[in-house]
Image (tube, rainbow, N blue to C red; front, side, top):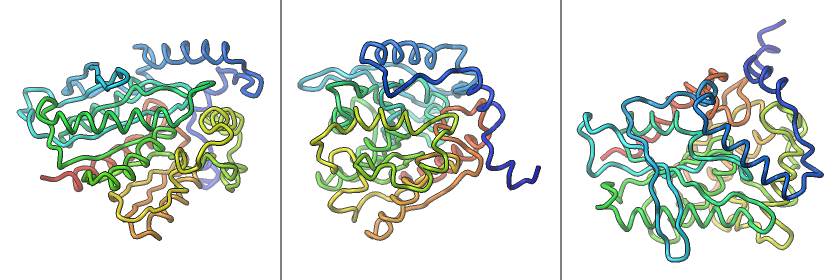
Length: 327
């Protein structure tokens, strides 16, 4: 088999995992079954055994759960810091991270990348355990959770031991909506944002969400299928949703935003979302760097144990953030 064909096949580990797991019928899944699926899947992603797939955290990082108390709710966040032995404990940059999944997911699934970023930048990485979409809970709730946590941490910079002038957002998949819209809100709120990183981003949840060539080409990819995306879109953007509330691609103005790194795995139905958003950012005058990882599937950054492309992607993310968060 030619090298060209090989590179367009998902990594062997991903194919094996896909073969061992039966995909639910997303189109007929009732709310109770979705709740049960979410609970079971999040337990699996947070388990010690899952580290073989999701990656082992950097041992030099200190990881703990904390609470962020907002006026109307309390949110859990997972916080990553360099170990005290490294000597970097005060005035560090802040990276607000938002995990992927949409109707499923937990910050724990991103321990590998976030712990390494915390140590290698160094920085404080705060990953938001936001509300997941469900019947009656649109993605706008997660967007508010991400933004409200960001503002609260910045307002309490001394308590969090961060430098409020060195901020970045980092989102994966559905979490990229939260990150991208936080970057837009930061501009509108005069909050200085240094960088935004969007990995396999989902940026169009309107009626045109499936009108991209990659949606057709990779509709049955092993880590994300079009039926999954259809369920996600129904929950995330119910009828009557303002497109601008959950679709960064349709923001009124994409100029003057923090420089962006858009990371695209090529074997992903959402690949053209990322490519299109990077182009729109550039057209608006916002610096946007697009990197593509041939042979990588959706959510690859959360699966370093089976997708080798996760490591070079982590390296480029760290380099991008280090350059833009320099003192």
